[in-house]
Image (cartoon, rainbow, N blue to C red):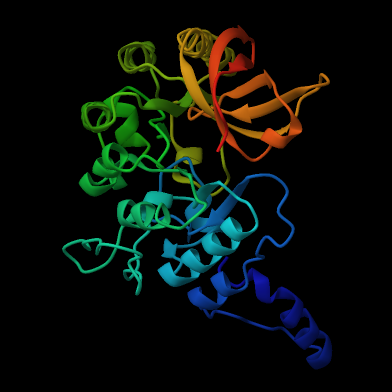
Length: 351
């Protein structure tokens, strides 16, 4: 999976030699060097790949087999691309990786200010990288996805409380609230350990909102296991979520497990879980009414004179505003909620 960018060259070699071509070189830096850089930026947001692959081997997942082991892009390359994006008007970057908070690399050569202490092993983790990127002129907002609970280390949690540019919104998949199922999934943590991580995050950043992933009907999931998932959701509270019925992925350990759950049972459980998660999403959105949120305006709305932007919590916000506000962050008082967006009124100058 780390060599697919060399396919055109391999095909040409195969055609010339009229034989098979085998490529087993895992040249990580070469792969990241060949990432397509965004040249024509449209809008004030952009994605920035910093990590690929996964070493966790959840029993339901194909990513370790299709994307390979965890590899991290070097810091200097990330910083160079972030600077390029900022020069093209990007205000918000989302750092991408299959397991993005597993990123580890050497510290930046230029700290852009006071030195940022490395980890005990001498490298930076994602917390240090976020602090550094926030020092780049023009970068006002930083997000990252997707994370694994096992890699939410103390420094990254502290960064949420210390770095204003790091948005108070985190996608942290849990998949199940039942320890027995988490073990069968090979998630590497218990429900209580996940809950403790959330408690530390909320202590560091009281306004943080969560998004999660859930799978129902995993092989062997009992009614009691499913009820534990519902109880977890009730206790935790999610502003957004992605939930699915378990489906077999050929070649994964879970596909061969006994006690596969019947499809009607999966459907009933998914409907119950999604009803609860949707109620939490609606409640979170309604709780924003009356608040003033900083909104990054990204594009024109459907109605004349209207712009659409994003709140710190990734909610779409519609507000009447001139096009000169595009690409700017402005305070907006939230006055209403629609099924998928917030309605706001700008109440201050943009920056």
